[in-house]
Image (tube, rainbow, N blue to C red):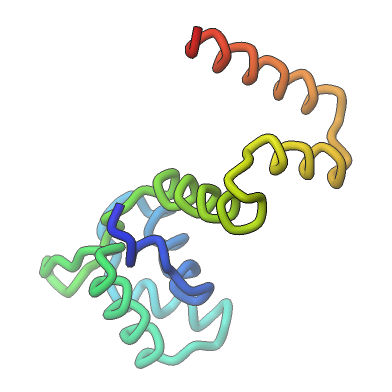
Length: 128
């Protein structure tokens, strides 16, 4: 993933969520309508965010009937990169410390804990 694409602001992330949900190219107007309803942003703000995301390589623009945008990175790629950054920055690269923090600070259900055990077991078997 382009390093700049992993540096998406919160406002840019709101645009990305619209594009990821759509699963197809989305017009500037449609993006604007959704963001103006939710956040009261004006058209120039939306255009600026789309320009920044395009420059970062996070979205690509295509001229269909109107200018449309689609993600150049998947939501999973973005989230995985963000987790790597958090693990490096906050936990010194230790995924174990991250998982410990999650387990200690969130009210995980028995089903959550069982699912984590299953994931760790399957992933452990892959590394054997």
